[in-house]
Image 1 (cartoon, rainbow, N blue to C red):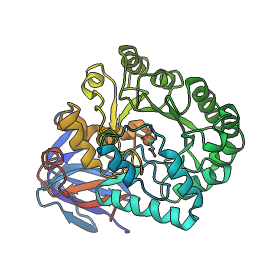
Image 2: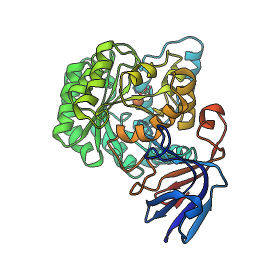
Image 3: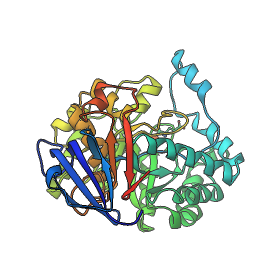
Amino acid sequence: MSGSLLVDNIGELVTNGAGEGPLGIRRNAAVLVEEGRVVWVGASAYAPAADHHVDAGGAAVLPGFVDSHAHLVFAGDRAAEFAARMAGQPYTGGGIRTTVGATRAATDDELRATVRRLRGEALRQGTTTMEIKSGYGLTVADEARSLRIAAETSTETTFLGAHVVPAEYADRPDDYVGLVCGPMLAAAAPHAKWIDVFCERGAFDVDHARAILACGQAAGLGVRLHANQLGPGPGVQLGVELDAASVDHCTHLSDADVAALADTARSDGSGTRTVATLLPGAEFSTRSPYPDARRLLDAGVTVALATDCNPGSSYTSSMPFCVALAVREMRMTPAEAVWAATAGGARALRRDDIGVLTPGARADLVVLDAPSYLHLAYRPGVPLIRQVIRNGAPQ
Ligand code: NIG
Ligand code: FE
């Protein structure tokens, strides 16, 4: 769309910048957009003229959701595994290998269609930025093509060759780590911005995780990791040691883990350097205890919320669902949850141009079918996204 766009008659605007309360709320507001950027925010009554116009009709408007953790490149589903869990089976992560088999057997176009379908689904639920990981290929060629396909849809792409040790390397994990750090990283790096490791009992231990993440860093990738999902462990502290942008899951944390994350805020001064990204869809779908967001927030840790969209542990693309879960099950206030799903996700991707609606930010906006952001938690399961504007363009 060419020309300027004015969104006015906004009853409640969440800016995550200057304004009332932690969400920087402005009432009876308007936002002017030019060339994909917010150029003015102010009172609707004084809004400048523009080429195009969206009347929010008194509804709430917020920054588009930033989903900083999703696994969209895969084939098949694991509905039967979900049903077995709901009948009492535990989640171990072992089902990842089932999806690896299906993904290797799929054509590029099949994988591409799945990524597009899920990305479209998320967009309709207000997600304007979505990180996409590889991790179901686990060969040099399959990880490279997964990232090539992911990069067609997002600039936030993550190499997760270290998701699990594939069956053909089961009795020689050191050799697999060598493959990941060598030819697989070389093939993946041109299409990836980040590197990730599933650091967990049954996946990669802390020494392997450190070696892989260090190789990724040396190749110019930023660090993020899956840590402390299924039990306590050294993953979170490894993330802090390596200045990870985010440690994800954080379901089982010791006091020392929380303190280490909080300390990354103190040394930086401008907010936490290493964000704790909580993925309540995974606890929902694995029927596990939820992470204690309150403990992290009270310690001063920056918290993000993301979907973890994947066919095994969390097959949802819905950020509003995650917000509702975080409020109901994780002792977050609605304001904390909405911040975590927008600005928090941006911090987890080390971005300051998204997750906020202030002059200079990318014009990624969501118009709700509701008068307040509170309704995202208050009316769970209801389609409340009336309109999405991405990069200044109504979708
Ligand atoms: O983030 N924990 C590791 N990876 C995914 C699960 C993947 C799967 O079960 O297929 C997660 O939950
Ligand atoms: Fe994940």
